[in-house]
Image (tube, rainbow, N blue to C red):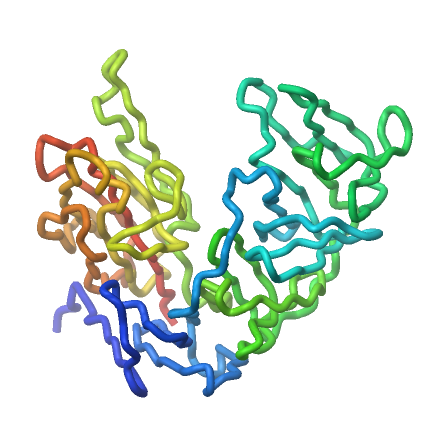
Length: 406
């Protein structure tokens, strides 16, 4: 008996199916639970709370159909990106601080408190001068503060002493001084003593709408929001409209976009011709230009953005069972004279396992049949231009999930 090249993707909807819009997004708030076989269960808010995803056999939890929460633009000068030592990051409006903690409003409304022990950096992208060549960067040791000074930046090395509602206390070359938050462009905080992480009974990674990613131990998902405890022991409650997706972190699967390709293939539309080269290297969890992945009117937090022609190769170790993913052209192609047309291909160990029909801009994401990776050592994702007018061949590999063999 031969092993089939594809295993059929199973989508089973349990319970009443809610009304959906043209992109298939529920018109009323629902919680989607999905297992690694693709089976989806939809719960209404009345059926919450949900806690132990592992006990339920759930790999992904999504919050769909919620009213949009206003988000300050990335380049709004009062909008901050806060990076934690554990690798997580949050985006929101900094409301100030007190003592050893800062307060960040997620979605413009939901304040969370973060300790200096877990904050690696605070950055205000909208305050970065556009004319200068200096970019904020972390020092080799100690703390560092960047302040806006006219059209440039003033760098101060030293020690963060604490936070206040209106500013940051910093011990620098001229002694201890409080600097107004309004003049801060970035601050980097050295990690002195790594916090002792509590063993997570239900480890998850949470992707947030509008930007942000958290890891920690899941408490419950209820009508009042999602409860999560970070590696440093900070308890947060995230409103459901801000939650894009919750993913189990038990090691049973991994997003391909989290693994670096062994070969990134071509990234120059004109083959490196002098004076004409237009390079579009692969973007992780972003489209070809570094913006949000969006196909068929839907936004995606996970995936790979490329520009055809593209060929990405990963060396595998034979431990994966299958690959699940979707593919389509990025909606940014719809604004041009050409809306793009490509052919997607998947190769395993040198053999083409799947090829799409011609895919054009504006189409809904194309679900790729589940690819069998049993014993596989090589995986290639390829995108070829389908016509000569390839200027808008902006392709997205969406939610590429590697499922581990049990």
